[in-house]
Image (cartoon, rainbow, N blue to C red; front, side):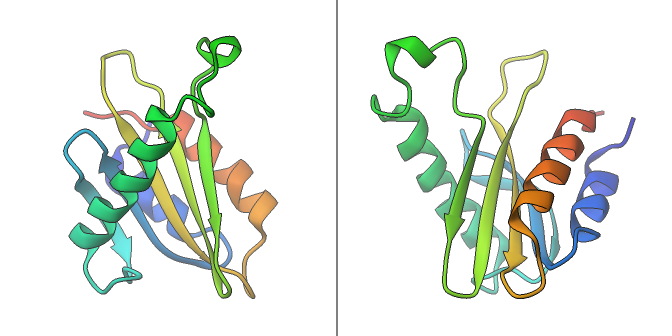
Length: 127
């Protein structure tokens, strides 16, 4: 099973990938990063992504009573030139991890990237 570095390498191999990070959204820290950050600083990107994740997770609209057994799985944010995919990581311990992929809109395929990122997230083993 791959670790953080290998998962980030696999994420960067996705067509159109510009950056990838594993983020602890309870603290806002990047546990690992690859590529060129959209802000020029992976720590700033991790902190800003954490704000978005917390807003989605804490919003009653997105975690309605019927969906409490199926928490937020991923977040997709589109911009004029790219996509930001935030894929939640399920772990056996109580953690708050998300895999963030910044994808170039002209070079990437959103559906394929989402599918591949979910697969990478499922394979991730923290060691």
